[in-house]
Image 1 (cartoon, rainbow, N blue to C red):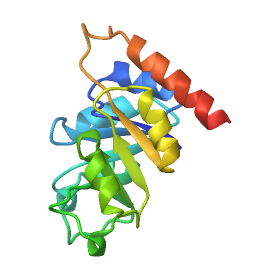
Image 2: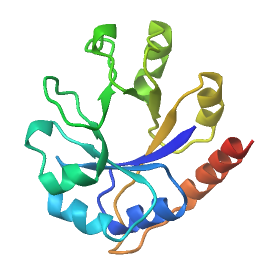
Image 3: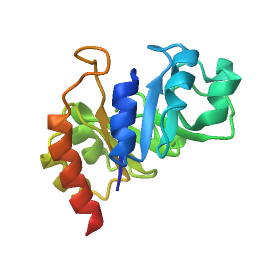
Length: 175
């Protein structure tokens, strides 16, 4: 099972999550300038770079070249990358299967009841709570996704809550 960090907006988060061995980092182009993404990515190595955008057809060429995957709910475009799509009972139908569904913790119960497992599933957690590691194992999830966040000051942030979660995840995937 993979672990992905979402909403990366600063170098502090990117370097921490890369150093901890996460499989992917998601940069949201609705919240960041593509130049900021490129500047941060220069300082890290390891995780796949995933871009979240509502306008994949106008993706900056430099950012597209570093993207391993695109997370978008927009249809009718084509780039040679993996596609992730948000799951919602109202918006998602089996004919729209992406490479992977991103299901928020808030929609998890509905998703499980829908039995719509045609594609791998990424469970997006509101908070890095270890209780979700058991759920992930029970449902053979492809990945869990946790959010980065704001720095307290530039370059300063506490990762205490993340440390315990990532330690438990590492133990689980080592088994």
